[in-house]
Image (cartoon, rainbow, N blue to C red; front, top):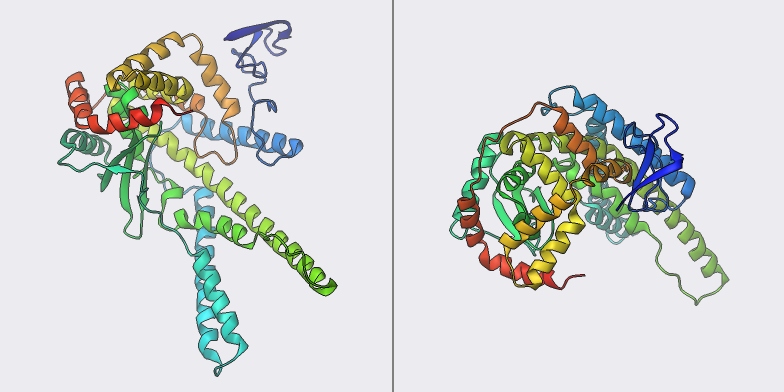
Length: 424
């Protein structure tokens, strides 16, 4: 429900009445006064210390606004590594070389001295540490239901058509799952490209919004997202893994005083090292997310190029209304209704929220701001597309083709419908 604050709720900048939805901290819808304010009651703490959380939110908001201002007035094209990307790549290379050096030192200690000797124990420990910290290149989610070309020829053809339109490579694997989401990623040493379509989201979208979703996700294969590079993707998890590795385990209650003191000192050292590694992980992640958010704007631009601006902005509104869409899908699934009912219900929900959506977009600018967010606030993404040249669709997905694709996915819709029907 939209509430308007009168009297003491007047905007001190322009004098207009402030507004609020979802019991959020009031702001001015016209000049956006107080939209950048930290709303402790509604925003999850990132560090648990109010002053630190307030400061990091203020910093994230400023960086997010600055990035938007820098990008809105110029063409969005893959522009190589910026400062944040270069720092991330440099640190990632150092981490990878460090792990390789630890492994090499361990192997050297195994053969450096005559057997038996204590150096072998140390060498095995270093090799074990290198194995624990080794880069992970990801793998295909075992819950992903992979779709072959024989099973879903229309869907594969649409994906290829969208990929061609935006100049992106075709995924090696196309699959579906039961999440209200979608993602594209490269996994393994061979960097196999994977496209996953969450059927609750895919089924709730109209034809052109589906094209926009494909354009956005396939755009991640060519938009220069630093998180997805073969060097940076594994390195971004290494410091976090190291922090977990050195996190002190529970102590023992037996032993003498000397043992207790030694264990206490060891736990202090382990705790300190774990926190330092985790702090390094946070700094590296926050740096990488600056470049990642730029890549998201570019993926939105690719969605607009292939599906049209109207469809791309409509997709963002669906994503912004995730809770409402989930409710629509759940209720329809409980009634035994399929994707056609999901689409109808979602369209009806968006139409009913048309008056409220501009405020929801504005509120996202405050609530989605974070140093660790991989995506810019949905409101700024919507605003970015609206500020750019209007684009007509290059790929048009007709209702007849939507029905053929849904027919290919009928068995998967039934399975997902049973999952979401009684989900919390």
